[in-house]
Structure formats: C-alpha cells, structure tokens
Length: 79
Length: 148
Image 1 (cartoon, rainbow over the protein chains, first blue to last red):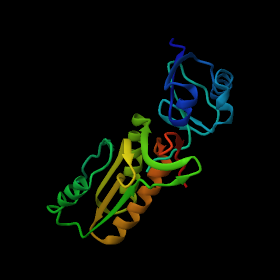
Image 2 (cartoon, rainbow over the protein chains, first blue to last red):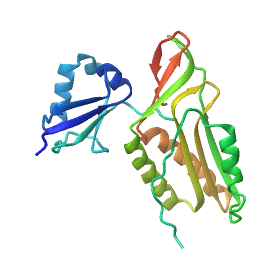
Image 3 (cartoon, chains in turn orange, green):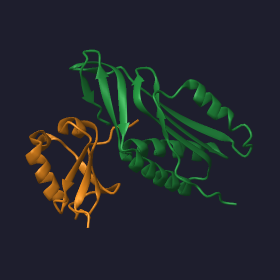
Image 4 (cartoon, rainbow over the protein chains, first blue to last red):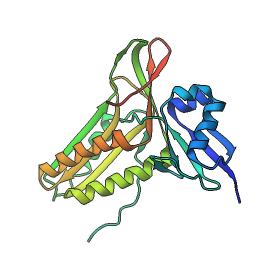
C-alpha cells in the first residue's frame, strides 16, 4: 500500500512553502496534515487555505486515502 | 437529439484577444435557431494598492480540478436554462492591465436565458474554480488578488 501522499500547493500557499509539490508520509487526516504543515512552515499559521483530496473539495476534516493527491487551496481569485 | 457533452479545456495562455472573441461570435452565424447572445468580458484593472499600482495579473490554476469543476458548472447551467451554446475561456499566465482575462458567452433562442445564464456562470466561475491571480505591481512586488 502506498502510504506516501502527493501534496500540491497553489497561489499564496505555494509561495509560503517555497514550492508547489511535496511528497510526504500520509499523516492520516487533514487536521493532522494541517498541524504538520504549520509545524514545518510556520508562515502557514496565519494563512487561509482549504483542502481538496483527489480533486474534490473538503469542507471538514477527512481521512486521507493511501496514495492521495492533497491540494492546499487558498481562497480562489479567478476572473 | 441530445449531444453528449465532454469536459473542454477552458484555459488559454495569456490574454484573450478581441480577435478570438470576434471569431467566436462569427462562428455562430450558422446556428440560426439562436435569437440572442450574452457576453461577459473580464478585463484586468489597474488597481491602486498600498504597495503599488497593478500592472498585470499572473494567473495560475489547479488545472485538472478546475476543468472538472467547470464541466460540472456547465452541465448545471445547461440543465437550468434553455441554452443553445455556452463557451468559457479563462487566461493562465500573465495578462496586462487593459487586456481580457475572462470570456463567457451564452446563446439562446430568447434573450433572457442567455443573459441570466451568463450572469450565473460568471458568479460561479469566480467563486468555485481553483484559479488564483497574482497581481504584479509597478513597485516590482506583488499581492494576491482577492475576489469580492
């Protein structure tokens, strides 16, 4: 089982992380991932962002499936 | 007969040219059941920010998710309004002030469906597509666009 997840960051979040992709061991849930991200990148504590798992937007905490693609999405500003 | 609709690429690299828009309008002349078109064009504005004046917006997107979402929105709008045609184009990369970054085009037998659908589409595109605008400033810095 692939317990590594691909994290994709966009917009202001990519800027704060200093890159657009990370490969991490699956922390299990989105809340655990947020805590791990904030620990690794303290700038993220003040940033607003949500998650999508495998391209589906999640409004609350969720389990991260093995091998998932998890996107870090700051507020959208297209148009 | 109902035509099967598939996800289309809505993204264009750089600004959307007035020529592309003119051509798109012209392409509808053979569709003689259309009685009205509605068009929305988004243009990059030279906003004055505390950090400087906006000279361009650099757009980026989570493209795969945005295309899936655009398809979902498209299907929902087609189901709600009696439209003949719908086209959505959004820029990626740098678009300078005064240039066009969004082109939404709806057509129907009668004007109201086209106008209402166009309005709803623009609102949903801005709220729901994972697209981000980095506003490039004349001071060489940048700020992240916020949609109101």
